[in-house]
Length: 228
Image 1: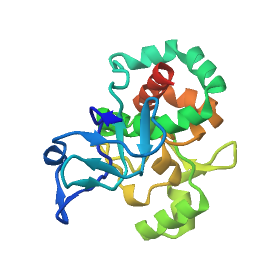
Image 2: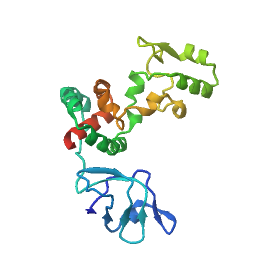
Image 3: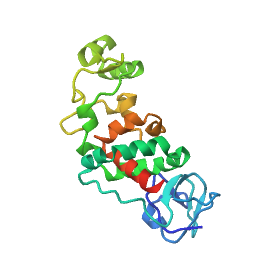
Image 4: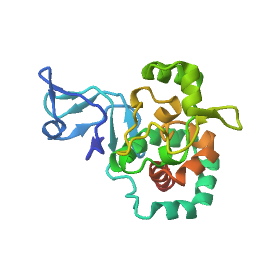
């Protein structure tokens, strides 16, 4: 099967004579897919692909076969998300889990390419992650604080017994929307918005909540409904 176009590269390495080659130079010619079963839509794979010539792609990359994902219009997306809540719930409850999991890595990467979180930061301004014991230990050490002092200064315990920030926006969110503790941030922050995990449909109530304020979740859900 000949692949006519690539969607985007995900930390892929194109090697020619042992040296890294930029994608534009290497994309000349045609791509031969040799990964086994013919994909029906989008594929994430690690199988060896050969490019006409002497360049080999041996690292995973994402591609789309013959056509692109739906071009989701992000204009006025919060209103659209509110209108589509019932549709999202219906889809997440009945979706083919295997098909969804195959699509998620592609859509997750694509969404982050199209949407700049630094222009939004709604998650940091409106909600709090859970600060689990390993998070508290790691962040306290980074800030050179005792754990008890860190908790007393920044956290409170919510109705579920989890430590969360005392108030929003997050005290570590800068005016430029950059995170002041990004390298040691809570695991909830690192994983958010869970659009590359099965949490998306396993805890669909959280997904529905997130879709109301996170354009990444909106984008992924709209594309899943259109393509799965």
